Image (cartoon, rainbow, N blue to C red):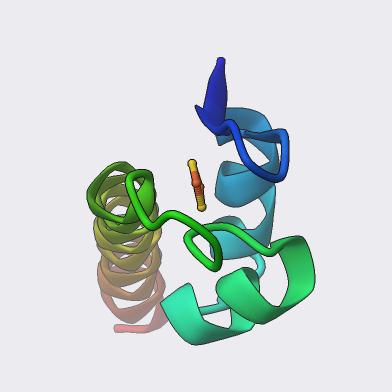
Length: 71
Ligand code: FES
């Protein structure tokens, strides 16, 4: 799905960058998302926040598993 019509940025591109640990400002700089009309900003931020929340949960889950294995 195209999130940013002005720069033809897809949700997949945003997800890929967010999962690399990049924040909104970096993604905006690299992809141009939300840098013209701005109508895509809320959607882009939601995607990035969701990715960071999920990857954070995954990291915490892995840390919990690592700690329980090391005991
Ligand atoms: S739709 Fe993204 S800047 Fe216009």
